[in-house]
Length: 223
Image 1 (cartoon, helix red, strand yellow):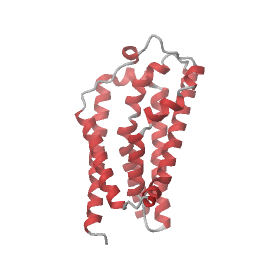
Image 2 (cartoon, one colour):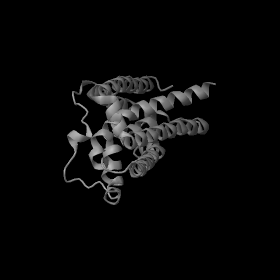
Image 3 (cartoon, rainbow, N blue to C red):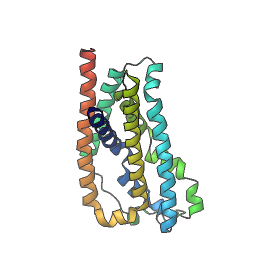
Image 4 (cartoon, rainbow, N blue to C red):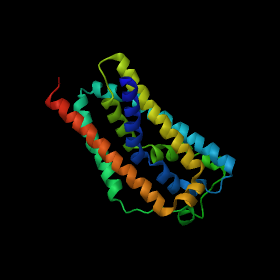
């Protein structure tokens, strides 16, 4: 039971911490002009490819994260403190941001090519990387992989599985956001998007603070 709760807790932490740097809803709204004139089926295909590319980028970062720090001789508590501060900063920036969500009509470029063939050329770069999953996302995943690191092999793989599951959930959300942006624009509106972003930002700030606190405690009392 304790392992299940630990697994679910790390899944929740991973998903919440990934939300601000990925920002699937906000990014999908901003990127909508590039996909706006695709047919419904074509848009789903494009969204699926973006979600798949993003999952691969995040999964590789998660799996190799803690070992990269070992290679450079950086201790896990130090990574927790630095990464926790970084996540707190992201949450605070999102909380204090006054940016409004723009609709596709407001951001649409008259010269944008939106046929599937031309869109395919930009699905990995720059749509998947770095616009959807960039340096901020990778740094958060490196921090989370260090936070979930354990001396026992079984616990390590459980924590790794939890983080990968969180990445999978985020990939699903990326797909839904990109595939159904027109519906989101109608349902959410500017105010709805701001509410979602503010709530997620507060949760992210708390998660970052928790990770940093854990690192400080381990630095003070390694035992």
